[in-house]
Image 1 (cartoon, rainbow over the protein chains, first blue to last red):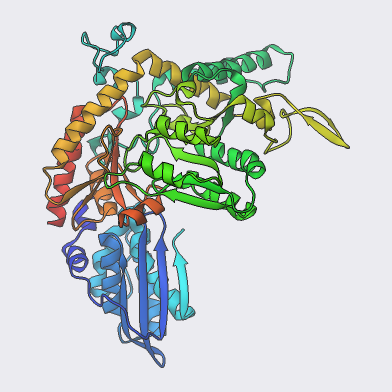
Image 2: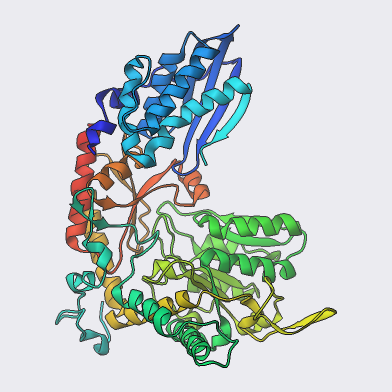
Length: 147
Length: 422
């Protein structure tokens, strides 16, 4: 177990300068995510166009892993369809929890999260944004908690 | 700090009466283990302290030589178990200087003790418009039971503001005590800031108005002098696992006159005198509040933990911890971007801090990687975090077994955090 597996340059960079940080007003769908254990709070706001999510923004406060994960997610899902997002989230959630998981598709920069599974206490930090996104898509004004 | 002559000579102290931490450490087997390939630096005693061999052996001896149910049988083991259990109660009474063992109620921990007072005393004492006074720095265990009680009784929960360095001020307390205040519930020592509240003064003021005071002693019992008669408190709650005893055992001290007038809260076996289908009568104190088979081995472990603290000498432990905290303060203040949270004079050996640009959770992970165990997060004190405008802090807390090498390992690991995060 190596610290640099968790805190890769991509993660540190997205933590320092999160992409798509802020809030869409008005938004077509929103959701709040809480991680009561560490106090992470995340707000997602989405623009919807038919079956697609052309734009997504997030804000809140959290650790480097949760901020970077949300930032990476916001880049990865922008412009994708609901079905594509569902498939992608399932692959990312497996990447976060399974040792030696190799995703069927190239996950690009999201692969920076591959080291998280070695740090079980941090899986919730990285998965919070994905659960929150799924909640926003399922129900336009949702709140999720990792506990 | 001057120590009584009697505590100046034991195997745990050097010739000057100072604690020999290396000798103390040898009693704690867990401290010898490695974490992530490094020696363990345990700085999370505020969450749960480790147990010395003396406690582990007392619990094991009880289980292998004395165990049976208490207060029930005429057979030898039941008598041995009862005398071990009641012996532990007397040990607790003596340590906190209660007048009688009738005032010592065994519970699961501080949380259960406070819930007991809320459910039993609180229901009888509060009506619509009445007030319970707490402070902004309380642990959730000393907030939420009162919220539930207030909602049930139509009463109000009032939280005292804090000074800039994290203290509850006597003047503020005086201002917030009202003719409607029916109960005051305060931490003896803050679990986040380490502030030692001026409890004796506050209790004096509350008593002038006839208002009883509960102290949450979870963070105080292993460090501060706890003499319930000198403090004058009406209730005192603490947990065994913060004072080198096992989890699942704790104590509620209550003034006998109050406990006598209070109704039972949980019911069943052991807490009754007679039971018929038409009705039942209650057992005497403290059994009225101990329904069901208690945590006997936990109580035995708690007694052994008090013996252990006595064997070293609590003032020597406190002096040692303060010395470590002062050392830590000095090293930590040199780390770029590090801010200490809670700086009240005379505070306990609990150090909360933030590091600019790094979330406490990331600090916790990197420190763990270096073998350093600290607590990170809101510390079950979300109202305090909101008050401070922080989502979370990192917290190092010290126990009798910590050394200056632990302090240095903490500082080294924090430089590592700076290295990773730039």
